[in-house]
Length: 360
Image 1 (cartoon, rainbow, N blue to C red):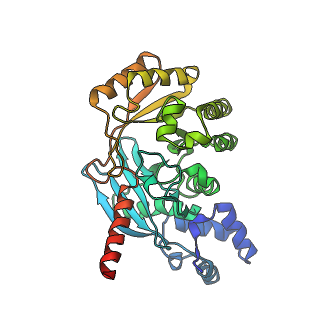
Image 2: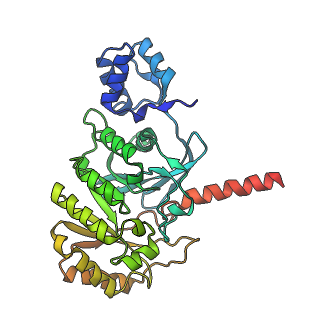
Image 3: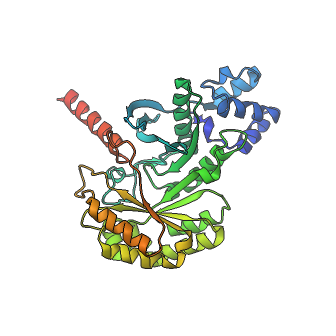
C-alpha cells in the first residue's frame, strides 16, 4: 500500500494528526517550516525534529511522489514539466515567467472527462482525480527546481488550469488552495491564485460560498448554446441559462471580477457575430468581467485552426467598442508543446509504441 504525500495535509490536519499520535502541538510548526520554508526533500533533514516524530512521519507519509519524466524549456523562459505519478500515470505542470512574477499552472486530474472538442487534455479520458498532495507537490517540485538554480526565485502566482476540471475534483482542489495560501508556509496570496472551470454551475455556487479571495475564470468559448454545446459537451449539462445565474450569484456574493476565457477557433467562434453575442451575454455584468481572448494552439487530433490575426483584432475591437474589458493572451512556450496535454499525450503514445515493439 502506497504512503500518502505529506503535502496533502493542511496545517490544522497535520497538527491534529501529530497530537493524536502522541506528539506535541509545536511539532506541526517545525514540520511545516521544514516542508514549505526550508523545503527539505527528506524527513531526516528536519534537524530540530526529534527522532520519534521523524520515524512517525516516515511510517505514514512520503515527501516525494512525483518523478520528473520530461522537462521542456522554451526560449521565453517557460518550462513544461511532465511528471510520472506513483501509479505510472503522467501529468503536466508549467512554469511561466511574467513581469509580475513566476506563475505555475497545475493539473488536478489524470485526464479529463469534460470533452472539449478542441482540447488536448481531453483526448485521454479521466483516469482518476489527483490527491491534494499530488497537486501541492507540483508547486513544490517547481520551487525545488528554482531553488536548485540558486537565483533566490519563488513561485508567486498559481493558475489551476492544467489537465482536468478542478471543480470535478472539488475537495482536493480546495485543500490545495488552503495549503499553498497558508501564511506559515508558501504564503501565496489568494489574489495571486486563479481557478478555472468549464462551467460546473453547482460548484460555482459552492465556491462562491467558500468566502475565499481566490480568482475565478470561466472557460466560456462560445456565446450561445448551440455553438457552445458543439465544442463543449459540458454545455448539455450546464447550458447558459443554468450557468450564467451561477456566475451572477458568484459576482453578487464575492464582488470579485471574473475572467471569461475565450479560445478563438478559425471560422468557428471568431466572427463579429459571436463577439456581439458575447457582448449581449455579459452586458449586465461588464463592470466585473474581463474577457481573455486566447489564440488557439492546434492539436494534431483535432480539426481546428488558429484564428487569423484580422479576425482576432475584429473580435477584440468589437468587445472594446461595446464596453467589455478584454485582452489577447500573451503566448508562453510557443516553441515547445504549447497546448495543455500535448506533452502527456506524446509520452503515452511513445510508451505504447515501445511496448508494442518489445512484444513484436
